Amino acid sequence: MITGEDFKNGQVLLIDKPLDWTSFQVVNKLRWAIRKKHNLKKIKVGHAGTLDPLATGLLVICTGKKTKEIQTFQGQEKEYIGTIVLGSTTPSYDLETEIDQTFPTEHISETLIHETTKQFIGDIQQFPPVFSAIKKEGKRLYEFAREGKEVEIQSRTINISEFEITQINGLQVDFRVVCSKGTYIRSLAHDFGKALNSGGHLSALRRTRIGDFSIENSQSIDSFLDNL
Image 1: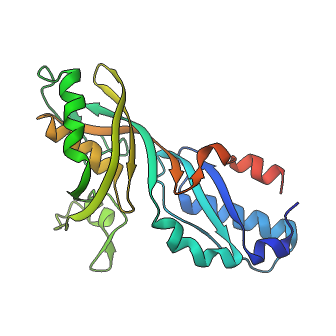
Image 2: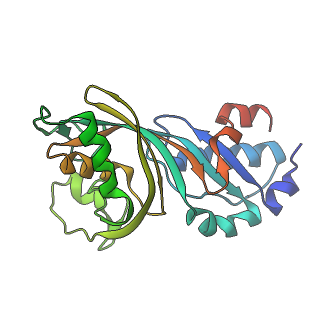
């Protein structure tokens, strides 16, 4: 059993984030539960890499002195699985917003889909989505987007070491990707659709690994709370 002192000295918790929760909500829930259970006035709790509300999967949570290592964990390689829907785009590049454009897909073959992944291997330039938490002029990009304001976004260099298509079902393309810190899988979905001379948006995403931490060793929030 982990004691209150253990949590203060530092723990790394692997949580399987559920759909529709923000990463911040998970941190708040765990912090509140740890404080209540162990009668602590305060305890540092933070996560090593945000997951969007519409994504599920591995969230690395650090407590106490382990929060000093968050930056290290954030910088490690990440693995995701997910689904791209071809033939249409959304402003947020995922299902947070409605479809705004549709594109032809008749020319897209399974061979073309597999071949196109090669364009995204290695160091590439990527533009973050306008619906993202990156700050510009003191405001989050999604705040500008929701106000309907256009803002210039700088591209960034990211690295994709693996990008494989695991299943194709009509316009739904399942994939697995291994990438560097700072990669937006929503942007990858959008750019992949564009590279196919069509459109694309992300319909599902699950993070399965951060460095040596695997989703297989994680637990649900309820399981953590039950065993606290």
